[in-house]
Length: 232
Image (cartoon, rainbow, N blue to C red; front, side):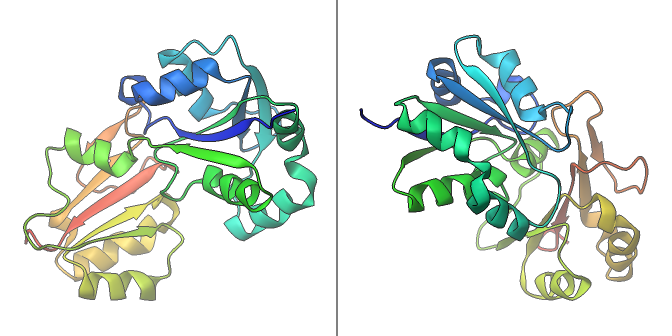
């Protein structure tokens, strides 16, 4: 029997209208749809977004637990049998799609799943999605980089030293999932005269969306900072 194909599908930042036609087509034709959850009994934000833009009734919903921990833990857990239901479906010739927020290539758990399955010889494909910082920049009508400016992207778990180094070399900086780092990030940006050149994106595309000047509260895991040094 011919093996199935694994699709890593980016569904965009939060607004189902931003999901691509390619993503819609792949999800509606999938036999199994992996819905990542962060805790037992939780809901999958990516699956909920996709369900508003595509008919997911054809595919079997398969929930996999991905706690918000270091990605190195994911690799180990994936190698220790976590993907057995996925490989079993692929071996049975089923088409399997995993939904993920934003884009698969930007700090995505689905990227690790894709890598491991590819290493095991499975056929994999990636469906691009709209990253939150691109969606938010569009809503803020703000350029991420212009002319010869450079753009650097860091995760919110980056150290203070890493952020300071990035600020010293990049014209513009994106810091994703920055919520927990805001208590030290905002004073750092203020000290460098960059706070007024920083836009906060919180829960882009969701009901609680906020786009504007940086603020500490309310807290959200989905917080991104756009820092324009080049536009100073």
